[in-house]
Length: 127
Image 1 (cartoon, helix red, strand yellow):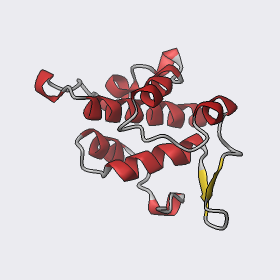
Image 2 (image 1 turned 180 degrees about the vertical axis):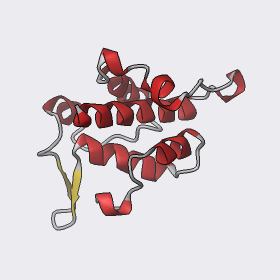
Image 3 (image 1 turned 135 degrees about the vertical axis):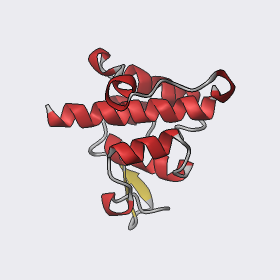
């Protein structure tokens, strides 16, 4: 299992967000970022996921962290967990205008959802 400690993950920064949107960061790393900020921690000793810091609603649906790139239901859940005032942070904070029609594939739209969730997480931590 890859180490998803914050030391091995890119920082939550505008550069990281754009790198995710432009597909410059591997899917596995993007998923690890999501897992980390959702609270999932991999315990090397037990070779299992510790979910003590994960919202119970997430743990019930995903006792092991989901692959957000591959799982539409997990991404839908992620979208629904973004508070309404934070739904437009991609546009408001990054000036992201969306993908062109030829780029509208599930993989890219799911990456955009993950960035919006991370922006929302970061905003809520700052408030």
